[in-house]
Image 1 (cartoon, rainbow, N blue to C red):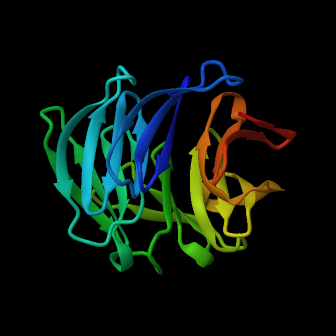
Image 2 (image 1 turned 90 degrees about the horizontal axis):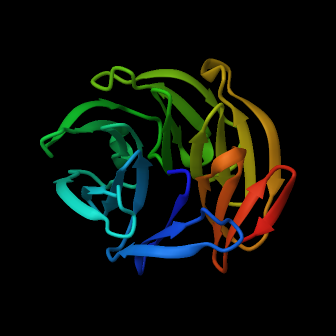
Image 3 (image 1 turned 60 degrees about the vertical axis):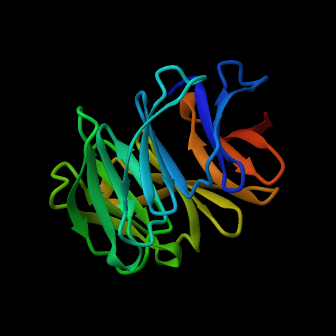
Length: 232
């Protein structure tokens, strides 16, 4: 959502934060469950907590409404969402696509076996980007979620710990604190556009308006663009 940002903390749950005034973010609500990963698509928030995947209605971010859950029968680590489709890392088994139906029922659609367990997943424009730790980023076509297919990859990123797709770019954060902006206009030929080294032990990324990123560190939530960083 354009005016909200979601900040996960494994021990205290998931905070929904209003960033309509970027200079003065404010807390809206909290989902009090240990969070493995989460993804947002429109008014739907998908939360992975251990092996449980739950859909929340966040049309009113100050009052998130939980919907049904599905148990992922694998060591789930990460997820990305596009509309009602959710792509989930299932450990060494690869990634699987799920759909959350209008009636509130979950359905497993298909699987793609990756070379290593996915450390992070993000989706945009019918594509799923999968970070395979120190084995780079893979782009999958999930227009047909029952049969995801490989499109392209990029390997020289170090150990990727967080990944966010936004517009024509994918942002990858590695364990050394470097954020890479990857040009995804040709997903079969992914390439690096720019890179920034961050301070403060960065832990996660969230895309914002105007091509900016929000960076979660151990001490703060900050805005980042490749022309400068502004603490929130």
